[in-house]
Length: 117
Ligand SMILES: [Zn+2]
Image (cartoon, rainbow, N blue to C red; front, side, top):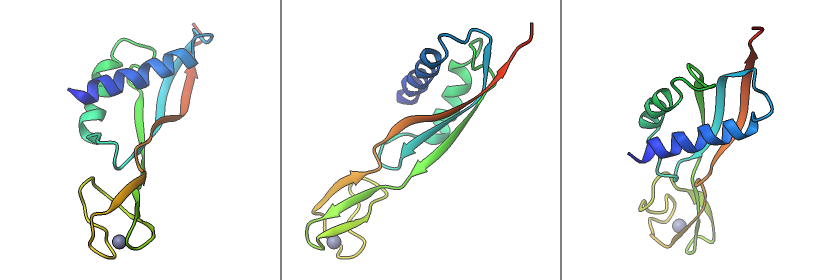
């Protein structure tokens, strides 16, 4: 499953950020995911729970920030909303679209707690 490797990628980014913080426990991770990134959110949330089990991010929450997709329409000569690859331009109905935004996948922020023990 595609989303499992994405969840593993997020987790390894989190781990490398915290490499000098051995006491840190992750309570939540916020990521930005574009509409056009082709990621199934429900599947990703599910994958997150399973890949983080037993790690520093065990029981952490994955918070997802959806970034709207956008494409350049050659006919309209402007940027238009694009929610899915293969959709037509919402203003002219054409298909001469070049996606410009919505493919991102990045870790925005982490929330941590520090164990006293
Ligand atoms: Zn158009």
